[in-house]
Length: 243
Image 1 (spheres, helix red, strand yellow):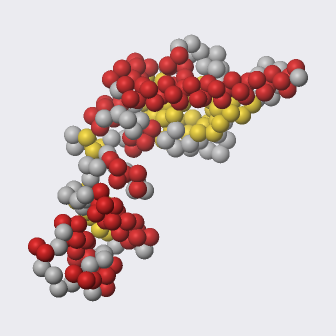
Image 2: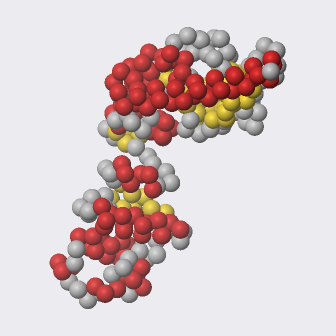
Image 3: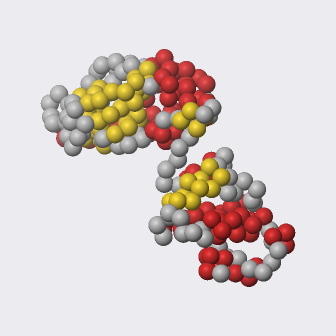
């Protein structure tokens, strides 16, 4: 009865299964799975046959169980549910998609994510080591798998101007790849520790952009926003020099 109350079925305790809704049947299955107080609960498409309201109630219950110390492993084809999970593992054609790729490029289809995963190169940089030097060509789209990087605007007549710090799942190098030309900033590994990067070669980045218009649009918008930030900092820097 305590378990039925936990899933909101105490009033249906003596009701036959066919007399309750599909959502209530799912809730009863969860209560049954919890009967032995397991630390891990595996749910295969727990919201597959439910409307949005019933599905929301199931996920609310899962969140409550997690807060009480349970671990929930859920298999789903519904991408809207992944926003409420602490970790998402994507599988395409039986192969794991790199989690950083899925996080950084969520608008790709799963097969496209898998194709990007196969093309990646792994690079490691020591603390403080330069990854991209200003006024040099950029040949990779970088995604951060471990550590942090600093984006710095370097001036000829003053100290460096810190622009941003990027961390796990963030990316950089897209401005130069989209616009062409040389790098407008310095990028270096943060002093706190080494940095591990996933690097997508220019040709594969261009192919990805051509094959995913949604990703192309999203990255183009990010490029515009970052350029505005860079220009604003550059103006402030010039004002300090000559103002």
